[in-house]
Image 1 (cartoon, rainbow, N blue to C red):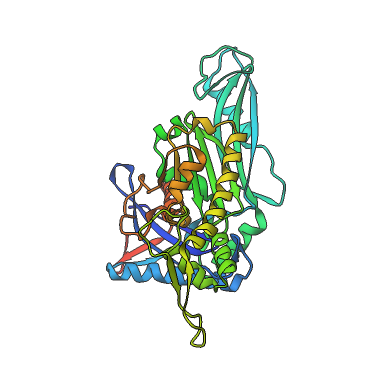
Image 2 (cartoon, one colour; image 1 turned 90 degrees about the vertical axis):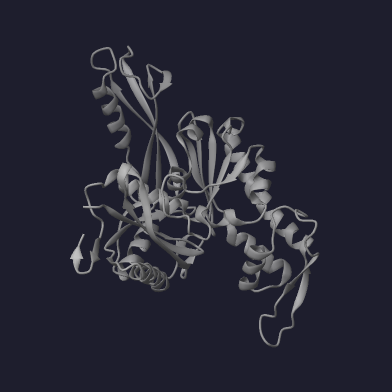
Amino acid sequence: MTNIYAALEIGTSRTVLAVGEAQSGQRLRVTSHAEIASAGVRKSQIFNIAMSSQSVKSVLKEIERNQLEKGTVINIENAFLVVSGQHVKADRFQGSAQIARRKVSAEDMEEAARNARAMPLPRDRELLDIIEGNYSVDGYGGTTTPEGISGQIIRLDTIHVHAEANRINDARTAAGEAHLELREPLFAATCAADAVLSDAERRDGSLVLDLGGGCTGYALYADGGLAATGVIGVGGNHVTNDIACAFQATQAQAEELKVAEASAIVGADPDAAPRIQIPGSSPLMEQRTISRHALDTVVNARCRELLAIIRETVEEAGLLHRLHAGVVLTGGGAALRGFADLARRELGADARLGFPSQVDGLEDAAFPPSFAAIAGALMYAHRNYEEKSLFQTIFGGFRK
């Protein structure tokens, strides 16, 4: 039986659902994907269950419509949940074990790992991921392969990513009202990194920025493993709000200006028209123009603020000089014109868009980097649930 998986993200700006199917050679193919504008969500948190549930229903219907066009009927029963927001936190824990026979064995390593995984979280938090780092023996080293090394105590460094349990429960409620059961919650930034980074990039040092509407998640890699991760409370909607305030525009007008005209770098295109037309917001409002230079100045200020916070975060981790593989941009916010160039200037490292290279089937997406987190969630499902079908696919009345 072919294994099929689903992943859902209820974001500030959009609700996204994707379906992935296992292929030969362990590759995963995204067979269907859909996105609609979110409702009932603010700063990555649901504030209206009914509106958010309607968004989930709508994206489910869009997937079903897409599949019908291919001659397939899908009954999606459950999906993995992709989570972001400032309520997501990451803490370091260390698990240790006594080395039983003076030389590290596989059993010693597993005991240290088991003790690290057993670290308790507060009751109001829910675990999203545990990322294992390096082992050390008697305080020395920093290796992923300590087996056979002599010593008395082995320790394993881990990063535990967790979120507010109430925020996860709100997503479960909204999805449940749309008759969709949610499986494990997964962190958007590390999911995106799984989809866009190679092993070499993790080893050489890289920073993934998952640029959402309400916030920006980051995942920093060095020496092959995750060195730091978290969420910064600045996203694409902050840019939209700044435009709306600066030019007395509606949110819809400001979003259109950001997408169609704005650049993160002032004066990036000297041949562009110096003024931009804004259509009237109603029949009684006349069309007007604004300065392109002024628009880009507003956008540039907010983008530089975000990148300054990111730079400080990476410097605190002592890894700014280690980004030899550069910065990789994912999420819808990565589509902002000039942002990659600005990131290159502000962070002093190469920057590129993060196209999901570890899965197939997203080539037809309008902006594939915006599906990186969803793609990574499907990869997780494929790795960990190979023997479990997550929903039924019906072809001409026969279950596959």
